[in-house]
Structure formats: structure tokens, C-alpha cells
Image (tube, rainbow, N blue to C red; front, side):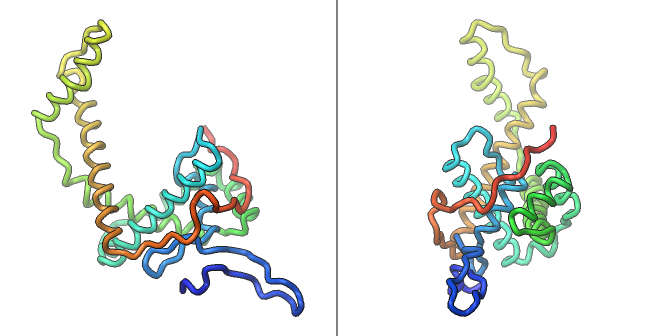
Length: 224
């Protein structure tokens, strides 16, 4: 979408003012992120915002949606996205669940002027990024025995002993420590990927995140 369409308006009857219906808030390369994209991200709980102030929540949604677009467009530009096994249907089911179910999602979409085709487009991005992380980045992560023992000593033993407690044995917590370190390293790889992707893509912020208005009230809370 051209940046010349930074503000999109419906054609108004002659003699009347144009009606603002959507707005480009950022762009990644030639791809625009619209205000309605942020609304969809809010509806499906793309990022957690519980406990955040309204301004913090807007920033979190903005940043999460921008990161997702950077990741997806980088995969698209490299051609990797076409070699991934993407389960879009599973992502759609997950987004429906986060939104409180299919009926609640449909109602929230209608209130926001959105449709299931918008959810499908978002699911493609989420599915592609998840597939890349799990199929390409995760297999690269390795945790050595030395790293496990260091984490055990520095992150567990010292803390528990300082509180007067008795730490569990290394073998008892080895698997949990391994999972923790793998996720920590994986998150580091993801952040490194995003930073490198930003150097390959032109990222432009057109509207400060804190000033982006809500299009509609957020959807119902997810079911437990």
C-alpha cells in the first residue's frame, strides 16, 4: 500500500466532509500497518496487556504488531516463508480461543468493522513466525552441561541458601533448568533476528503509539 494513502477515507457525498475510516500508523518496507490492524491485534490478544495502563497497552499492542510485521516481511523477502510448514488453521483456533470463542470473536470483529479474512491474514503472519522459530531457530539452540551447572549454582543454590533454605539436587532440577535456558537463548536469537531484519527493511513510524486511538472497545476476556 502506498504511503501516499497515509490516511484512508471513504468517498463522501458532494458537499460533505470525508469520513476517516482507517489510518496508516507505520510501514515496513511497502507494507502498511493500519489502525484497524492494531484493533484486530487487541481483539485477539496478540500480546498480553493485563495490568497495563491504557497508554502502556497501546504501546504494547503497537510494538507487538510492528515486530510481527517485521518478522513476516523479512521471511517473505528472503523466500524462507515459502519453505516453512505453516499451520494457519491451528493459529486461527488459538486466536479464537484468546478472543473468547468463535462467537465472541465474530461479534468483536463486526463491532470493529473487521472480518474473518483479517484474522486469516494475521494468522498467516503468526503461523509463519512460529514455524520459523520452531523449525529453524530452536534447533540451533544448544545448552552445555557447564551452562546448566552455572545456572544451578548462580540462579538457584545461592538464592535459596541466602534465604536459609536447602536447594534441591542438580539432577532434580536439571530438566527444568535446561528448558529455562533453552527458552532464554531462543528469545535472544529472536531478538537478534528482529534487530537484523530492521537493518534490511525500511521501518517507518507515522503515528506515535501512545496517540493511536482505539477503534472499538476490546473484545471479551479469553475463556479460562
